[in-house]
Image 1 (cartoon, helix red, strand yellow):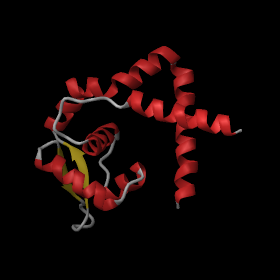
Image 2: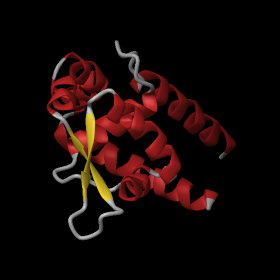
Image 3: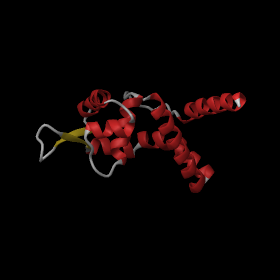
Length: 141
């Protein structure tokens, strides 16, 4: 059993290294993850919703989103019902960045994996990774 655990740890670390992409941008990995998470959602989300979705704290989201706002990639959209609240939405500049070279770089490794594994195996891999992360997130709490 211990050999399997060591093999699992080694495989997880190698997978993490192999899926990390060096991007040609001054943005941090956290800021890029937030940017692409916002871009991939059909509707703008509140920072607190992003924090839950990304398994991060709200201050972490706020700090990194403020950099994206200052750069002009994301904007605050005031909530009509609650003036204290807002959602984060992509700007044209942010969409162009995600759709352009940065998007190609960001998606390259997962696109290759999807192409090589095929849609069915790729989706199974993602479900297993999600399940594993849920189990490990619950263990930390």
